[in-house]
Length: 183
Image (cartoon, rainbow, N blue to C red; front, side, top):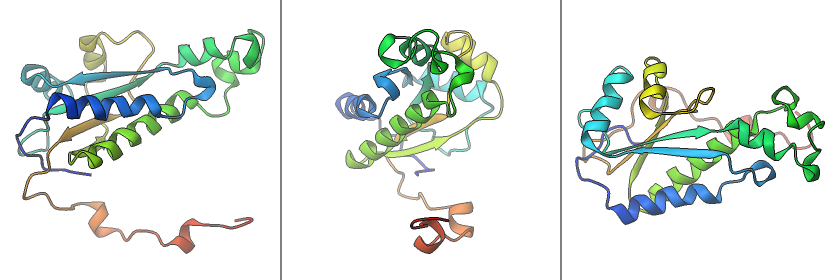
């Protein structure tokens, strides 16, 4: 993850390839219930940072992408006969053991972050703690939908350094992570 961005804009074709990678993410039932709101206009970016409480960047990233999964699309898809029909458990929000609309959105985010690296662009996934009602209203997001986080894209500044918990907490080992056959 990049935390210090260079002011250079991302060329439109590079940004389009990053965004296009999200189309290839897994999607439960091929529901494809994801919307991406892209902010790359300086005035809209300024509004975004003011709405969510400011930027911690010296120079803010030139592109913000807000991934918004749409559970309604998943519920409709799973109400079709090939997925259980309108009376099937997954045709109702409470019937889902895991909210795959959020999982699928997260996978699309990871693909965009990986594509950004392939394109020589830095990326950062983050959350915000204030301003969500104003943000959703200002972006025209339909009632009941909300982002899973925010992606920032831009070129890495020469002075960018790892900071925070990625420096102070050691990465787990394979023995910590992998359990073969059982826990």
